[in-house]
Length: 348
Ligand code: NAP
Ligand code: ZN
Ligand code: ZN
Picture (cartoon, rainbow, N blue to C red):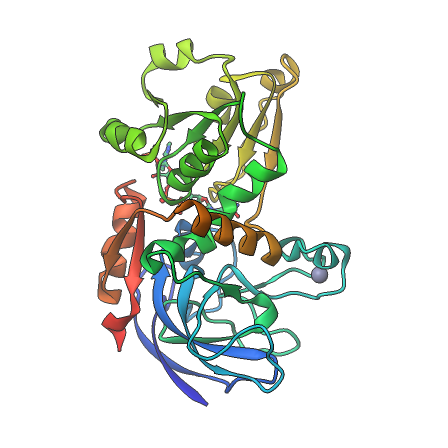
């Protein structure tokens, strides 16, 4: 067994605290990764707080993982010891259903095996995530990470990156499209970078006036303060797509109204409570709402390769593991520029 140091949520209300546990030695098809950096996603907070349903405490969150391979199983052919590797939001799936067969394991009919708050398939062993010193994962659910990029900024690509890249690609967003990105946090700042890179005209839709200069630095062509009624009025019927990354309850109707005829809102933000569907706002202009969940292994690799080629990384604030509770508090106040990334060396 491999001893692992970690931080865990022990319940829904108290701060995360140090935790130690053991992981099984690498199996024939697995790789062992010494975790170097782990991004902090708002989904970690939702899960730790029990926003989305039952939690198997102690919970070790973290699904934006980058590290170095320190051991490989006897059958492993895709990775070697010493290489950089990444792990995202899931570590396994059924491998046989239509979604798995088509490379969209995130939609597995049996449910993907989450990197945390799941159980290893066919066992009762809880999966534990990236707020830890090492992880052992099947090579087919492990990503190649380029040595070309600063890996601190690569970690958030494993969730924030793929979650925004995937729906923009699926809907073929690019030149000639006007795109609004709603919410400038971890997902939002990657959405701006990708939409701009794909050739779209991008407007940052934010409720934080202080983020205007940063939005422009990230490449957004325009900034709109959503708390200003005049701005909202002037933007009515103007976007082909709105990529909605908001983590808290909000008025979908107000933003759907900014879509032109046939416009689409892509929902990736996952607030705890269900939203009402404002049917008339959809009907009157044949607008639609589509959801999207991270991306499959094949597309995640494609996204990482695209980022290496185009020099795209996340803007990060590197923190020690012990800062995690302050980081959560700040994210709940929309105060993050634009992803916290834990330096796992602070835990060793
Ligand atoms: P984050 O970094 O905390 O950013 C969320 C942003 O939403 C904030 O920075 C803020 O932007 C905006 N916001 C927050 N509260 C708001 C409110 N009351 N009204 C309007 N805007 C508000 O979070 P994240 O890590 O990007 O995650 C965002 C959401 O996506 C979370 O719900 C997360 O669970 C979900 N998620 C989904 C997937 C998926 O596969 N679908 C994957 C990862 C994460 P401004 O200050 O600019 O307004
Ligand atoms: Zn995430
Ligand atoms: Zn499946």
